[in-house]
Each structure stands twice: as structure tokens, then as C-alpha cells.
Image 1 (cartoon, rainbow, N blue to C red):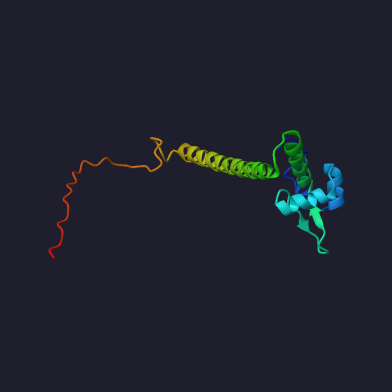
Image 2: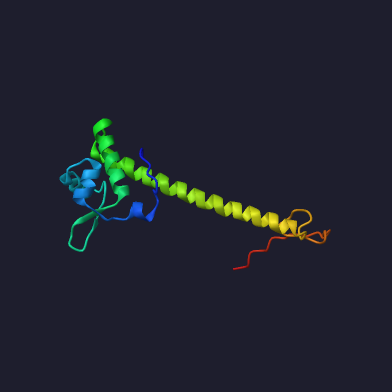
Length: 146
């Protein structure tokens, strides 16, 4: 998305508390446009107990992006929907990569910690105390007679 707000990812940023009239005014759109976008699945509002739509600040940012893509860049709403979906997938993938990198860093720290204890003099993860000179001969099993 082109706009970043302080607190994005924050609970307040994600909270669906804005009435349709407020969200429309913040996005610079008519409330009917928001209803249409909701029907098309571009920006999905939550419903209040009385049935009214509720939007978040994140939704308002998304509404502005939909407007920019459709009006400034000339992309039809089906294309905008596809772009939004791909951006969501990218964001999820980036979050997953960040989590996996953190887990990998933790694993490397744990390995370094174990190696520093002296239990792994050669740096092996599984220490061995002896070297074997045994010879193993492999013979295939015979198929049972039928």
C-alpha cells in the first residue's frame, strides 16, 4: 500500500469502529461507493449489532488505495481486487519469513550456547566418543518361495 500510518498493525488501527459515513468522509468517497466495494469484496466491513457497517483505519487506507488504483492508474475493480489479494498474500508471506528467520536465529543461538558449554569439542551436534573400524556386510534378502 502506498500510505503508511503510525500504529499500523496496532489494535486501534485494525479496530472496526468507524461508521460508514465517517469512513467515507475520511476516504473522500460517497457512502454508496463503500457499500459497492463491500459487495464486491474489495473492502469488507464488519457489521454492528444493528446491521450497520463498521470500518477500521486500515480499511480507510485500503479504500484510498482502491480509489487511487482505479482513478489514477485506470485499473478496473476486478484488477484492483486481484492486486489487493496479492498484496495480502505478500504481507502474510513476509510475516511468515520474519517468524521463520527469528526461529532460525534462536536455533543458531542455542547451538552456539551448547557448543560454548564444551560438550561438543568438534562442533558436532551429536558427539561421538569412539571411532569404529567395524565392517558391515550387506546381503539382500532372498524373496520367499511361493
